[in-house]
Image 1 (spheres, rainbow over the protein chains, first blue to last red):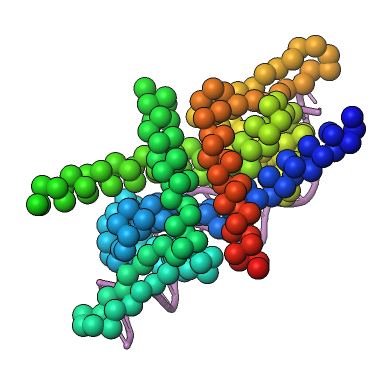
Image 2: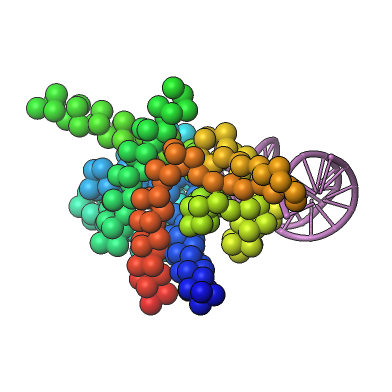
Length: 117
Length: 117
DNA sequence: CTGAATCCAGATGGATACTG
DNA sequence: CAGTATCCATCTGGATTCAG
């Protein structure tokens, strides 16, 4: 019935909005890479992440880390023991992205096989 | 031992590269939204997708669809029955993204709750 | 309806230099 | 080490128009 169709479309609209909400937080050339670098190691320093990710500049790393902090996905842990170092780690909320990262990694392998051959 | 650490780091490098391979295909402001629009409905026409996604222009939809086609994620199905219409659908390869989309949708809901309150 | 072409403002992002 | 500031080229993407 028309009612069922309308319901279905409502569901899809919601689904699309929630996917978009996720992407608003994760869009940006490097965010996923940054998250996967941090979650691989648990804690990671600025310069370590800089080395992990091929091609990123410190300017962009700084900017994207700030955005991830605002979205409560990563947090900074500053050790005031000398020498002062800053470690980045996932928040509890950021941790819930691990499944997605893992799936993306698997899909990326399959995709490379598919496209490159 | 140093050997184990080196192995671990090799693993992480691979993992990060495969995540990056995935993102190379999926980056772009609208790609995930386009995929989720198509996979919700099975087949979807250009103008339907245009309506599904808030804020996208036909220029960008056209461009991103082309890139998704090149990456063998979506395919065009042209019906030559009049009036000629073009339907987009996921390829078999594109279908394997459904899990990720679904996870993203779930995470997006949680994220909205977390951030907006 | 399904796009492609053009125009153009504003965002993105790299290189470099600099600070605490 | 962990960033910030500035400069500037390139890219992104919206608006509009046009075509098959």
